[in-house]
Image (cartoon, rainbow, N blue to C red; front, side, top):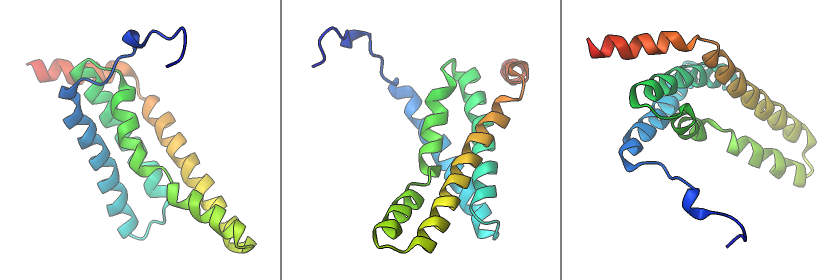
Length: 138
């Protein structure tokens, strides 16, 4: 236990949001997988999937009146290039510098694509997402 930390103030995700969080993760991964199967590489599908996922997270956040981060983080976790980081380190330790640099550059490109997808998704004005909520009430 950390002294001075008020653990009662730490809030957890309400259980009613778990289905939406799971859907956002599945949506992002399925979209990414479909785009990779179309021979688009891994960088462009990461960008497109993250952009679409950011839009979906913002829609969920407006409709469900929760922070966007709740849905965005759970959706992005499957897209994070963990295997790329692992193989970069693996090839580095096995002294295969060509594969290490190749995987490292690809991993940084995917990470950059994820960041750009989030930036582009947040570039859309919030007022458009509130229109979605208003049209859902009618």
